[in-house]
Amino acid sequence: MPFDFDRIIDRRGTGSEKWERYAGRDVLPMWVADMDFASPPCVLEAMHRRVDHGVFGYTLPVRSTVEAIVAHLAEHYQWAVDPSWIVFTPGVNRGMNLVCRAIGERGEAVVVPSPVYPPFFSAVTNSQRRLIEVPLARRAGERWEFDFVALADRTPPDARLLLLCHPHNPVSRAWSHAELARLANFCRERDLWICSDEIHAGLVLDGRKHIPTATLSPEIAARTITLMAPSKTFNLPGLGLAFAIVQDAEVRKRLLGARRGLVPPDLSPLAYAATEAAFRHGEPWRRELVAYLEHNRDHLTAFLAAETPELKLAPVEATYLAWIDTTALGQPEPAKFFEQYGLGLNNGADFGAPGFVRLNFGCPRATLEEGLLRLRTAVHAARASKR
Ligand SMILES: Cc1ncc(COP(=O)(O)O)c(C=O)c1O
Image 1: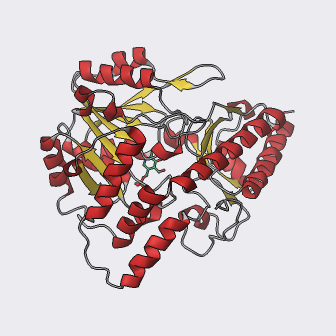
Image 2 (image 1 turned 180 degrees about the horizontal axis):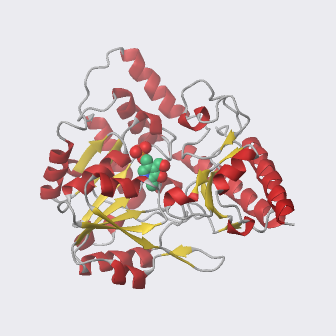
Image 3 (image 1 turned 135 degrees about the vertical axis):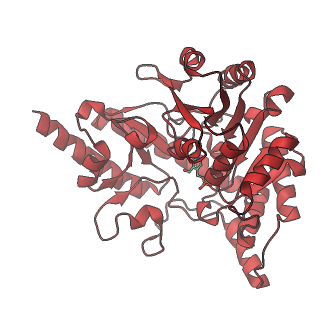
């Protein structure tokens, strides 16, 4: 059965963070990272079945959900995970904050290649660790890469942890085996733990394969904490279910200790039901989603090249997020500028890169079309004001 990604669903009035920001204004929201698609039918059916049960008590990790996660990791990534390594958290951000508290001591350094999804920065500072930002390198008009010279130069001796976004939000890279291996090797040499945020793992485009950092080698697995969730791929972020995969028993203990009293051990029973269905039965839907996103990405890329060539877009290899360099427009606050023309984007400065905006193309094609028309109007206005 083909799935209908073209259907426009009115999300206004549902408390949607994405849509509420511009309530009552004619601004099309293409910012925060959730999609405007309904979740897969198999997930909705599983949630209905769980609702029909009628009792929603405090819920421990559901055994069949854990089994579905383990099977999913084995099937998609040839990764043999012991169920005891899985620690559930209410969201990946919460998980990353816990990891920052579990590794090292107050005042010690945490390395963060940037630009990156802003909560990476706050996870470090919330945990009273020292944030060491190391810029990714950008080859002119090409893709973003790790800057190994900068990493070597800027990583201080007291660094204990590196936060990796893989695939990367916002630069949309699906890191290759060679890049990952080199980064992991650097972490091994410097005795750094790796926290690998792989929330976008299911959204790798063009037939590339996601390689979990922990699958590089047993040695790397032993120093890696992986964060995953069904939330980006199956559009379930509001259900707040994520999990850490932690092979090291001592770190697992510290993670559970950091959680105590602050982060509830129980998650929503509906979230467990949804996760299980997504991982067991969601693959046909995921494949169609990826094809739809590739199409949106291609359309966006062609549109920018033809209509607004001053906007530079690096190749989008994964995610539904486009990272756009607007510096040629000469606008000091580009996201605010686009908002004036009815388009709500993320502001690059929040990610550590002023002059950039992030556009979310996880939406029906008609919505994307409307967004691109608004984008073009804004760029024409910027051109006119420069003359
Ligand atoms: C890389 C990355 N990590 C974490 C999150 C947030 O995850 P959660 O909602 O599970 O905290 C996002 C959401 O955009 C993300 O892109």
